[in-house]
Structures are given as structure tokens and as C-alpha cells.
Length: 168
Image 1 (cartoon, rainbow, N blue to C red):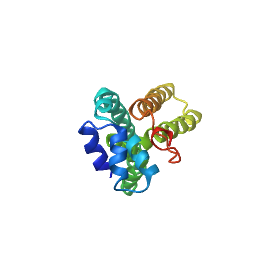
Image 2: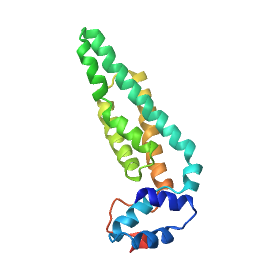
Image 3: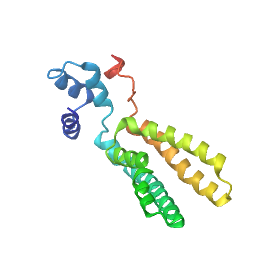
Image 4: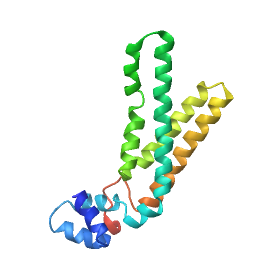
């Protein structure tokens, strides 16, 4: 159904037209509304594309840092088997990266919240001022862009399916 919504959006149909069209085929009206409101319009996608790319770059940098840290620890301790952890450690960041690249409405706020929690945890452990600065810039950028894009790309999207299209 999401592909049909995307195709309808690209054809220039309004949310109401898409809702009525899909409502004739599917009976779960709340899910239809949630999918419609969670699908970015082509206009918004184009308008905020540079911000989404910037968010992807910041998430990509955090993935790279995590892989490099695990690799450095594996080499320092002389245990190459630990390199397998390099694939596991950044798994949440990889999920964020993929979902942000797919414009998944639900992931933006989750990404911002988990990054904020990670930042709070990191600041209690970091002592080197350079590490603190890099962490704050990366995390701050991810947090800010996540919430900004969530609000701008999906202004009417709520994780609560109890509210449908037009508050129905």
C-alpha cells in the first residue's frame, strides 16, 4: 500500500484523494491515514533533501567512528576475532541510516531521542575535551536534524494510529 501512496503522491493527488482511493480497497482506515501521513510528499522531499543528506552524513560518520574504535581496540589487544564486533557495534546507527535514507517517518524522532540518551551517557564518561567537542557536535547535529526533519517532512504524522487523516 505504501508504494501506491507514493505513486499517488507523485501523480499529484491530495491526501484526501489518496485516502478515499485506498479506503475503497483497504478497510483499516486508521492504518491508511497513518501510511499517508508517514509518506513524504515529493515537494517536501525536494525542499529538505540537503538536510536529509546532512543527517545521513552525520550518521555515517558515527558508524565509521564506531567501526574504527572497535578495530583499534582489536588491534591493540591483538585479538582479530574482535573485529567481528565492528559489524555489531554500529547496528542501531546502520538501521537509522537505512531508514532515514528511505524517509521512514517513525525513525526520525527515535533517532533523535536515542542519540540524546547516548550523548548524555557519553558525556559522563568522556574526559578529553576534544572527544567531548566532537561528540557534542555530531550528536547535536543528529538530534537537531532528526527533530527538524521529523517536523518538516511529516508535519501531521503521529505514532498514534488512533488519530486518522484530518483528525478522524
